[in-house]
Structures are given as structure tokens and as C-alpha cells.
Length: 118
Image (cartoon, rainbow, N blue to C red; front, side):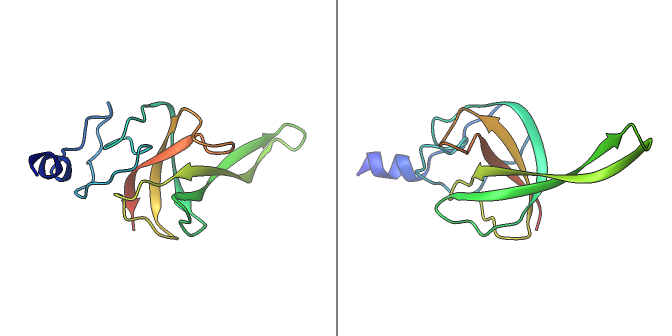
């Protein structure tokens, strides 16, 4: 009985960057706070453009691309698939921060670490 109590009261581990850890506890092994997934590399902030289905979603963020011929910038967008741990309350339209990790699946190399704006 003490083992289950200790498991439910598990504290979120430090992931190495200054973010507020989630208040709820999850048992997802791909969670950077409660599982064994390590985060590294690039960090992006973008809007969730697809509903969270089976712990994954798609993030979109705009960027500027320079056209040398016209000496102007054009707006382009980047879409990245990211893993969403169950302890983070994320839905379509939220602005979240994602960070690079090892490959989680064929197309997912990023994991959500913080909700910036709901």
C-alpha cells in the first residue's frame, strides 16, 4: 500500500530548463516530468492546430523567409508533430512550448513541456 501511495505522490523531476512543472501526476513513460524521456536541443513555441489524439498533436508557428530576387520577406509556416503527456491540459488553440527529444515515433521528435497561453 505504501508503494502505490508513493507513486501517486511522485514529484515532477527537473528537466533542466526553467518551466513550471504540471500539478497533476501521470504514468506516461514519454513524459519529461514523470517518465524517463530526456529533452535536449531546439525549443519552439507554437499554436496547437489539431486536437490532441492518442497523446499527439500538430503545432504550427510562422517564420519569415527572405527572397533575394525581390529583396523582401515572405511569411511561411512550419508544422511539427509533438507528443502531449496526459499531465498537461492542452487542447486545440492553445499556445504551447515544445522541446526536442529522442524520436518517440516515426514522425514525432518533440514533446510539450509548457502551456504558454490558453
